[in-house]
Image (cartoon, rainbow, N blue to C red; front, side):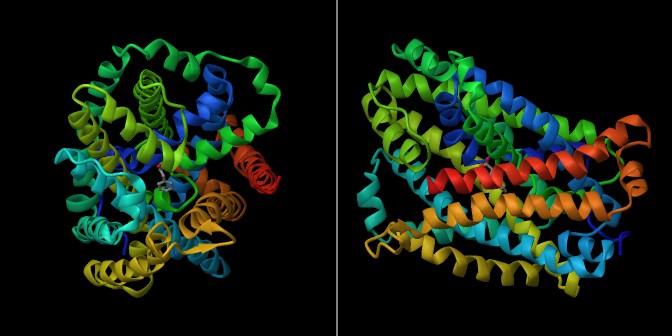
Length: 433
Ligand code: PHE
């Protein structure tokens, strides 16, 4: 029943929880590098266009579906049309599979935070060869489990209320420190100096589309679920606020990372290597490196945990809505399943070295679920929402039916699916070629 459904305590609580979802390890280890490698400052053109034209409209669509049905993804889709329940289930499965490996990385982050805190930073290979990744995978999973089990307000919302301000404070501190390092100018040059000629390269645009969807946590039913706990706010204003915060935090992360990397004479990298190899060796070289490293990984942990919490809520809410399970039971069941899904990824970098086609299982999961699966999920949402939910209902959610809403519907029906298909094809071609 819509009446006794839990609600956010305030607009701010909802916005913070959504920022918590959007701001994840992707902001720190993916965005800055993609900018540096795809035209520097010029990359902001395709990126901002993607966020504005495709990211925010899709966020608004998810929130509209969630708020107007008052349900999470499977039940919401079922209420649009019975046969779409299965499509909802696919989305739930994709999110759960992503969460499985995301928690493995979250565990690494936690382990690194503690190791810097105790002044004993670990080498990545030695760390992953041990049994420690498994323990920290479990610990991160437990932290997320306990948070989601505590409910929308007392768990999800509260976690972000505390962690997002802490994250921003640490980030600002690290940016100031980093910009005063000797190599700062060189780092900023790599990061920002614009190369507009790159904008004719379709690969740059595909990177921008993909990063925009990934970074906003859109297209996975998270915002849809969050929307079902939401009352009367303007969906455009909320979505825009979340997007701006996400972009600013990602941009700031670049301002702290590249000066540090170049100050230590290292090469910039993305992903696992940046966070667990390059930056730790930068921290090892500078004054106060242990403290800075600890702060950096604590910040990354705050970012990761609030994203993981938002992912876990998707299958949990789906179980609660579909089978009337109490939150505690739903959370426990999903937690057990996620730990199983994540196990192969957790083992993939250890001495066991679980890999498929020569690729560590975690990397495979990131590609299949986190890249291809994510785009497919977004495509499902844009088609089910854009084509099968009545436009009148969407209008009611986004504030009336004028020309702006007609333009919006055209974007959702044609623009967003087209861009998602291009991104999907582009990713498959790029990885094949
Ligand atoms: N947006 C998160 C990040 O940038 C990742 C994420 C993707 C979280 C999809 C939830 C869902 O790291």
